Image (cartoon, rainbow, N blue to C red):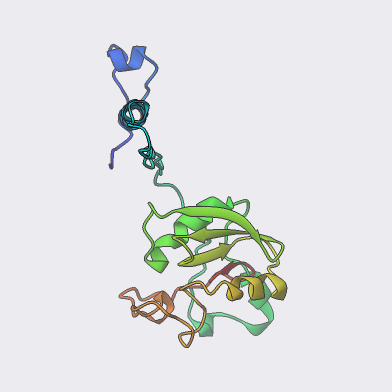
Length: 194
């Protein structure tokens, strides 16, 4: 569902019930639909015949995303615009204090992973990592990702790897795909998304 954050009229029932925007009404509708599904499954499971297996409650969770400023600094430049002595300034193009989950959702489209993909946060190689879409991408946005963490991630063989020789998905990795933009994309450095 896509919805502009239109403000509810202050005289409306929704506003009096505590909903400030149309988006909040939509979120509540989805929540109630999920609870209705859960109640129906629970009711069905109460009336099972002897020996029958109970029906599991389907995934009724959902994400709410909003358009915001980029979590990445605008550091696009051609090689001749960089000076060798200043390369350390461009070691990490993530904005200061950018939350790791925000960074993750910013890079998901780059790897052609839908926003609805399952995301599991866990520790790998001593760093906090996000396993996306059952191993399609393992991303780490910790500072100073070391060799131990990179090797631990690589051992899990995510489908998106930093080399085309180990890339196993049927489409080429995004860094090998031609783009119509005249600005070359600057990779995340100091942090890992493989």
